[in-house]
Length: 113
Image 1 (cartoon, one colour):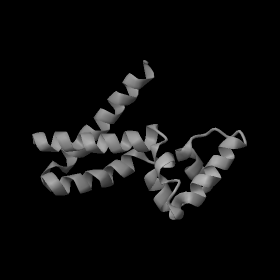
Image 2 (cartoon, one colour; image 1 turned 45 degrees about the vertical axis):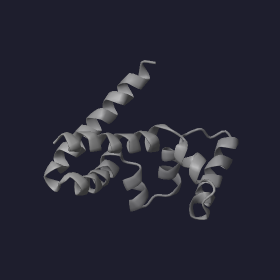
Image 3 (cartoon, rainbow, N blue to C red; image 1 turned 180 degrees about the horizontal axis):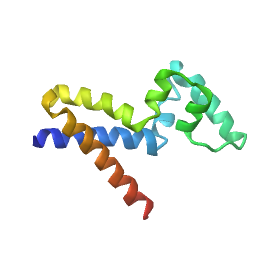
């Protein structure tokens, strides 16, 4: 059970990196399969549109996978399934809920800085 709680920190870290930082944009702009999307996002930022990468994806690429990747609950569901593979599927619910709770706590604490 302790392993499940520890592994849920990894899910929280992935959520924080994806939703709260520009790390994805910075590190993946050199990969050809994603470079076009990031270049289009950079061009829109230079033009004065400052909506964030997640909202940019929602507005410009409406598909099932984009909606999945831009929803914290949805993407955490799949992260939790993968994580539960390592610690046991009986801990899936614990991993899923604790990841969301940790994520919410970090969001609340980061707003007070």
